[in-house]
Length: 80
Ligand code: SF4
Image (cartoon, rainbow, N blue to C red):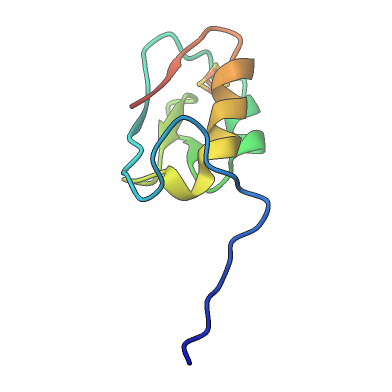
């Protein structure tokens, strides 16, 4: 009998589970660092002092990315 691992605490939102989540940061970024603090697995402040996305697929961090999107002071984060 195969064991099933249930992932708790991450209920699906509007996106279908298993689909890729592409996140980008546009040129409006002021490098405040909030997204990096919120989702350190996804964002990093680069040598130019602005945020960059360090994963190709952020679907495993959807809740944290959404929080970063909601709180970015200049609305520089986009996800699809
Ligand atoms: S929260 Fe927004 S402005 Fe701040 S570093 Fe991230 S993308 Fe840039």
